[in-house]
Length: 200
Image 1 (tube, rainbow, N blue to C red):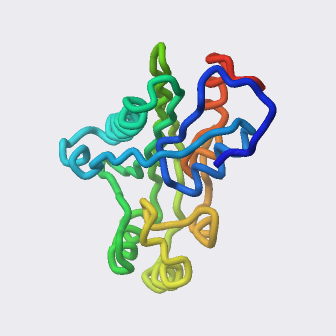
Image 2: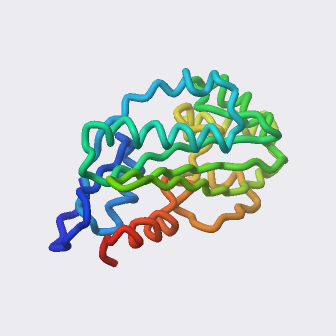
């Protein structure tokens, strides 16, 4: 839940996500908001074979729309992230073994983290995609195993946690907005919401 502020908002603000990370980020903006689970079947969308950027955008749109249909007087924010390299999508590994396998493929190379956001409101909708390029250091099997054992990144696309020890895996990160990596690009999102009349 966002922090209560004596600010007049043009529409009630809803985050279509149960992610604690996204909720904590949106709370930084100081606008009161609520959260709703979008209930979107993500795997069904992933099985359609969309390109990484299109997939992230489509999922963010579906999440925002799913919540908006029962909250049509509100402004709903949907977001999704896709980790990709050479057109391949790296999802949440789900197990220690799969995390090691993902890192073995990503090590020594660069990949992209695409964070899509859709803002849906009574008079329209807007979608944008933020790209962060991450350059991973060359890593041996022993280093990968030690990292996975410590951070247990089995629920993270790409198999790393930048907010924890995972930051050590990278030699450089090219980004416009560091909050995008966590799951919600606040700079561009703020620009969209300011245009809708949300107070600075």
